[in-house]
Length: 91
Image (cartoon, rainbow, N blue to C red; front, side, top):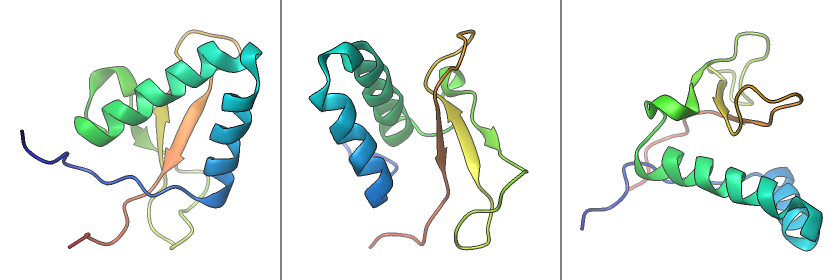
């Protein structure tokens, strides 16, 4: 098996959100969807059709580069999204 094409590094805020979801049973379904989207992003990449990844033009990334948005849910009121940016290559 080959290594995944992407390495995901989480901000403290993202880690907090994941922990909060894990601590509340009522969010089990939401957490499952978030983990699935993150798994697709890491193993397949942002080109996976279900993620609908696209540049988020309203706000720049923290490093001043492009900020990207990927879908956790689609066709759902208040659907969740993942915002991310490309970092430097990992050795």
